[in-house]
Every structure is written in C-alpha cells, then in structure tokens.
Image 1 (spheres, rainbow, N blue to C red):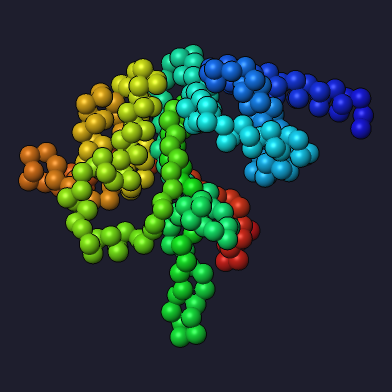
Image 2: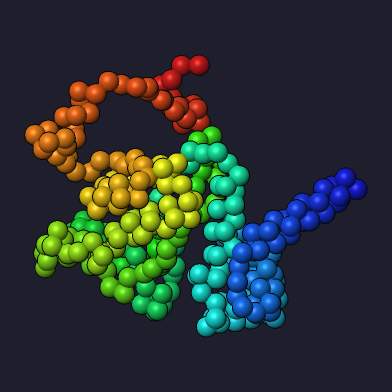
Length: 282
C-alpha cells in the first residue's frame, strides 16, 4: 500500500470517528461506561455494515461486550436513538427547507429454529405441493417503521422517528377480517397507528410542521392520518388506496383529479434496464 493510500485511510478513519462522536453527543445512558461501549459497538459495526455482531467484533471479548450492552436493562431504543434524532434535528435547523419526510415499513428476516423467540412478520411462499398449490410459511423477523428526512434536492438529513415491533402470531389480514370488522377497531389498537405516531413525533422533532411534507405509500391512506396532519398544521402526499369522497361529498377524489390540470410530468428512465432489452435498436 502506497503512502498516499495509507494517509487517505487514516484520514477516513479519523473522519469516521469524529462523525460517530458527533452523532452520539445527544445520547444519555446515565453512565459514561455505557456511552463508551456504544461508541465502540458503532465503530466496529461501521466496518462491516450488515454483518453479524461476532464478525464485526472480531474477538470473543468484544462480542461478549456488545451482547452485554444490548441486553442491559438501562439500554433501550430511546437511549440508543436519542443521539441520532438530536443530530437530525440540528441538521434540519441548519437548512431552510422545505423538508420531505419519507415514511415506510421494512422487515428484517431471520432463520431460527425457534421462530417464536424472535417473532413473526408475514406469510411467505415456501414452495408448491405436488398438486400445484402454493405452500406458505410464517416468516420470522422484526418490523421497522421509519421516517427519513430529506431535502428537496435528495440530501438525507437523518431519521426523525423510528419504531420496531414484531408479531407473536400472524395469520394474515384476510383471516383477521373473517373474525372482526377492521373498521370497528379503534385506530389506536391497529398496527397502522404507527403511521400516526411517526407523523406526530417527526413533526414535533422538526418544530416547523408547516415546512414539512410527509410522504407515504398506499398503506398510509388513512383518514385519521389526514385529520392528524390537519391538526398539526403539516402537509402530506400519499398514494391513494380508497376513492374517498371529496369537497362537499358529491364528488370523489378520482373525480377531482380527472378534472384537475396537469402541473408537471416527471419521467425517470433506467438506462441499465433499457439496454437489456433485445428489441431496442442501438
């Protein structure tokens, strides 16, 4: 390795350590030892994003320290995420806005002999029976609903809210509908309540809700979410799932959109996907 490469690597490691220190400045574990352990844990993890804890820890002592930190009763999501959320707030305060807040749910899947110890996420296709019918299994894992703040130029500023959970039992929404009418369940008792919680938390973190646009997919087409956004004085852009009544109730949303003028059209073309098509001439 040349001298320039070594110097560049040292500068990178120095900048990474400085970034971790800055990102953790707002963490409050109430114990400096826990703070140092979390710093070391992030430093090791940053060298192997997506790898297991034993792999990034490299030795048994560091691995055991990491697991002890995560299993400590004084360590929770609030303490772990507190520093990053504060850093997100500070970065937003240094920008003029407006801000786009992207809300979405993802899942982390795990293979475990005892899947119930982790929890369940969804029904997945395993293979097919001999008669051609699909065979399903319940996937094991953890669900995460996050709210990412970005500038209109596409610069990510950090997470404004995040929620983790799993399901002790999962039989699918269709099975649930056979037992109870979902429309009769209060929104606070539904999983979809996470959309409202993140909307409220992210709006509070950024302090200027009128300067934010919350964006979600079809799952965020929730009437209670619209009411909450109006109550908080913030903006939202969601993909329609239900053709709701609009204006005075004599029109639907689709009717209104059909009669609306087109403001602009944005077309994204993926060049890599186009060149794979054999019928496209050079």
